[in-house]
Amino acid sequence: MRTLRSIFIVTVGLWLLVGLAYPLAMTGVSQIFFRHQANASPVTVNGQVVASQNIGQYFNKPGYFWGRPSATVPPDNPMASGPSNLGPTNPQLLTQIKRQIHRLKKADPGLKNSEIPISLVETSGSGLDPDITPKAAMIQIPRVARATGLSTTVLRQLVQSHIQPAGVFGVREVNVVLLNIALYQRLHR
Image 1 (cartoon, rainbow, N blue to C red):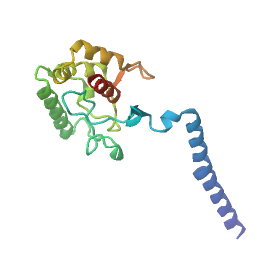
Image 2: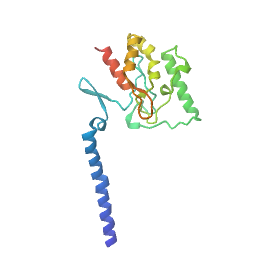
Image 3: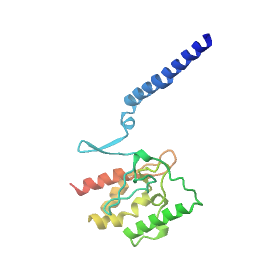
Image 4: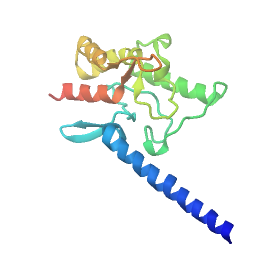
């Protein structure tokens, strides 16, 4: 009986410590020191939250920059986050990549296969990555210029201003969500 009582006390104690106290402490610390990140890194426009800078959104209109393809259904659904899990020998992966290349070339007929960066045809590990390479953003400028009427020079400057410095892994990226919000604001001044 004494052993059973000890087991019960340890179990309840650990549950209170690990299941309650620790999560509450971490939530408190993150709200004090990392409030923006702890609250999903919201992006506001005119005082209203319109997006999270960490979750890709599905842009398919020619007048916006397109991000990485999403592995979720429907596209960029944060409730269904996850990779496609298609390996390099899976014929389905090649079919998806060809479909994405066809979509890109249909929207921009002058585009050559060799110019299309991987970040525009393959999904990310989470299926929700909002970032593409600067090259992936730059090759979309002619299409966006035709659709919006903005000059390629203006769009190039807009992309350049949204290139994030190389992080820990030395990769420069462009957050498509932030870029498209800036584009929208530019068009609706």
